[in-house]
Length: 334
Image (cartoon, rainbow, N blue to C red; front, top):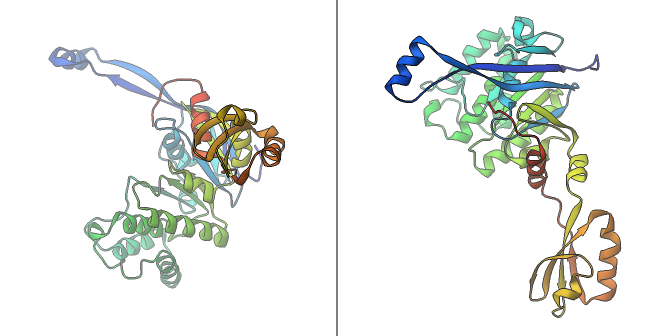
């Protein structure tokens, strides 16, 4: 683990002891007097580090252990074994010096008071984090303007749209200028416009303040636009840690090529250049091995009446799905 890491995780594991509930009245009575339990491994021996200023995508299917890991890093849960440090502190010690430098935003949880305007919650949080009044005013004004909330902060939270509430949650989390931001599904359920606004804000915020961000999201657009590096876990185990580009190369050995022809060409002729995925009139889609792409497309252009050719970017979501399905099965909890 590098000494300069702002987040450091070493052989971190978490297991839960859960009660086994049996059906029916007899099962309820039996559970009272002779309860049975089972142990579920949520996170298994994961190791990684994050450098200051990085935005890292933390990915995995439902139940992979992402939220459990973030809760351990933010001090909400104690690990069963292993070590973790955030800003040099052990997070589960929950020292005020660390808590004043981190923030956690969960898309399916809220810290704003439902019946009060968002501004009132901001004022309470200013007191909690002991933020200077002038600094607080400047910071909130900047955050509110950046997120397009100027005319919303005095509105009762329950009357805001989901996207507006999520933006207010971000303002609330950033009032104290955290150095590390944990984002757990921050765009879940939001419309495309709200998602895009939040991504733009996070990118600019990271650039301006060099805040380190660990992001979980099921929306691959979030990951593609914000993260150069991704960490993937499945069934609680780490299965990949590296760049999105390297991941795409490793799990996508073929490329699809769409060609438009001046006249129809038989399928068996097209098959000489690649696997024919579809053929509709003068438009065909072929699949080719990535390392043969340049040669085969050159032959296509030389030998067939091609008027247009395109090679779409690899779908990152498909690549991530391949990573998930190639991982070993195991127990799940999130």
